[in-house]
Length: 357
Image (tube, rainbow, N blue to C red; front, side):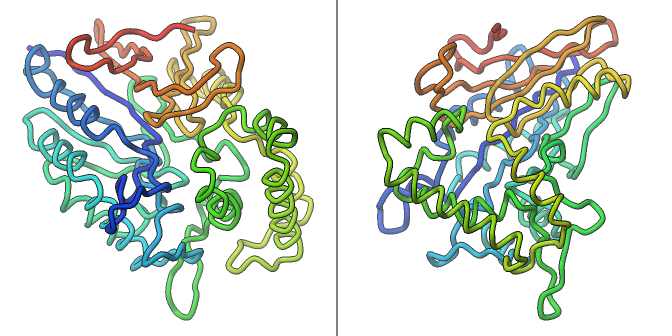
């Protein structure tokens, strides 16, 4: 009898592929580990894992609908048609990833769980789920909010951050008789501000801590820093004056609090502690921050953040430089109880090892 294993990954931010149709580099593509991810899935389908029950949990932001264009345009109003077209373009741009997912989902005792993040709210549309189901096949399910099992809580984490939190009672708005996604303020900031700068500085959304990068830019790249500050101020003013189309109305005090409390790449550690202490979980797994983290607390309480498989530039002195760390949560049942570890995929020569900080 094999083992019961769950693998949790997040924040791949798949775009339309590394190259555009004319052969030029697609600077809006973040994910470039297609072959490595395929090898990761294939490894967990054969060999020592052949008899195991293995579930892949894709914990949000697998697709990057916020930075995918259609015919060169980035739509602020995401309808079902737009979301489906973007999703299908992403699937076409990453054939190796989706062929590997299809092989995995078709293997006996394998299952895929897709969860929604703030970059892939298209999962709210039936048409998007149908497009993904057609590409993946096999056994898979969709979860929007959280995945709880045997004392383990898995969620993407954007709901713990006011700027990127969706309104669960109002996922959609009406526009000319058509439903559009009711995007949170943070998503609109990405579309309206960061995407405009990303074309010239592709790394802008892959630097942490972001505040330290802004301090560096103020001295070393002052024109950019001033332009970003002006764009950000104009965005905040437009939100305050209710001039952003389709923005869910909110009191000015609430808007100000969201803007002032916003921190790019938060650790979500305080939120995880709250869940561990108040909700009775022994393990909390999140993504969203792009920064891998493993923490153990009293009474065998564990928080894991799975980070991202995309290259990140760290300005933190403890981890300075550009890194590409293929981290994931490995949950294995030991004596009937799930035990979670943060691991890094090293490839077939050295499949995995625990990560320590």
